[in-house]
Image 1 (cartoon, rainbow, N blue to C red):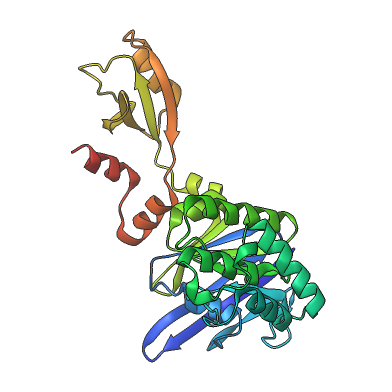
Image 2 (image 1 turned 120 degrees about the vertical axis):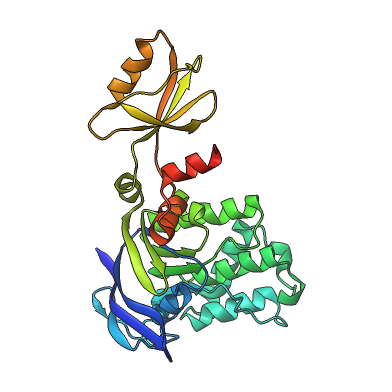
Length: 310
C-alpha cells in the first residue's frame, strides 16, 4: 500500500532548479532513504512534502488523496535538520505543547511525553530549558516530539547528527519499531552508510534530479562489477589468467575481476590446479557511496581498488 506518491515535482529559485521533475513512492511500513550530497535538493523536496513550501509543478498524494497541508499536518511527523525548538521553554512543557499542536489532548500529550521520556532516559530533563541541552540531547528531544503523536508518515532529516553511538543506536531501534507498527519513514542524509544499514528502498538525487531509484539489495546487485576477494595461503608469482584480472591485493589474498564469459568456478579451478589452497572467496558488492560516486563522477569500484593498490 502506498502511503506517499510524489509525481513530477518541480521547484525553481530564479534560474536554479532545486527540484527538477522528481517522482517516487513510499510504501506503508517501509524505511525509505533519500540520499544525496549537500545542496542536492533533499531539504527542498522534504519541505514540499510537508507543506512548508509549495511546488511549482507536480502533485503530492498522501494515502491516495491530494496532500492538504492544513488538514494532513497531524498525519506527518517532520524532524528538520535545523533545530525547531524554543530555547527558553522548559523541555517537558515544550514537548506537551508540541504534542497538542498535533491534535492530542492535554491528558494524552502528558502521558505520551512521560512514556517517551522514560524510554529515552530523559525524566530528569523535565524542567531544563532547551538552551541548556547539548546538541545530542536536543536531537533526542526533537525525535520524541516528532513521533509521539504516532503519525503515519515520519520524515527525519539527518536524525543522527550530534548523537554518540549509544544514542544513535537507541533512535535507530525506535525507527525499526515504528516501521514494524506500520509507520512509513523517510530518512534523509548525505551519510550513505547509515541509509545502507537501515533502509529498504532508496532514491539518489543530485543537482535537483533523481538519478537512482530502487531497493537497496537490488541496486547493489545492479551495479556489481564481478569483483571477488580471494583468500589464498600463498600468493603465486604468476597469477595472470584469461579468466580474471587482478585488481589488487587485500587481506592475504587478491582482489580479482572475473571476465564476463567465465564463472567463479573457473577462477577457483585456476588456483586449485596450481596446488594453492583457497581459504576465502567472497563477492565484493559496491556500497551506496561507491554507486553514487560512480554515477556522479564516473568512478568504478574496480578503479577504486586499483587506486588503493597503486
